[in-house]
Image (tube, rainbow, N blue to C red; front, side):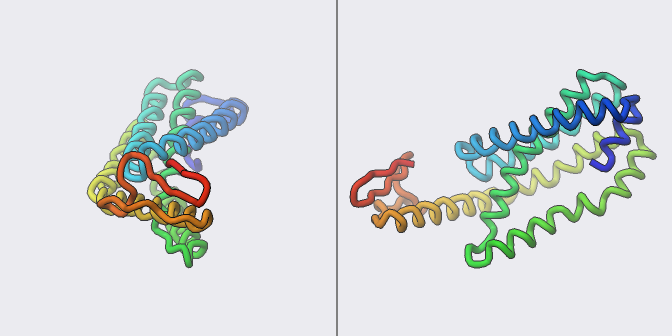
Length: 212
């Protein structure tokens, strides 16, 4: 965001245009991305959500490269901002779920705060070198490099896919165990990965059968 306003001003957009158009688009796109990300992650699972949403975030940087090449264009500006913040909202959902999955329930507040603080360090301290790079290389090259810089992170998610899937499985098992404990029932027989067999996860309480 520190470079976002100078970028748009360099393209010829006024402060009024930036304030009125971008803030509204950012808010709507971020809310939409968060809602869609939450809904889709339920179906995709943690690993695929991180991989797909992270790839979407990386690709969204290329929309700014297109805008930088095209110059002042209101339609492209709105589209680029909308796509970027839509992807950002979806990626934030996956990242939050991943951080929560890493936390021990006994120390979840402390660990989540610590991991969240570590996550914002690059964004905080890379502003100066990023600005220098944009000034030297130009905006199109800068956004192309930002896309390339995201590839190792996406590759790391793929490399650690078994660990990420294990986190997802453990988190779901803990949630279902807690639900059963609250209902006062007993879980159905477990499948090969510690989860109930079949596509439906069935847990019986004394009066109700829950399908998840």
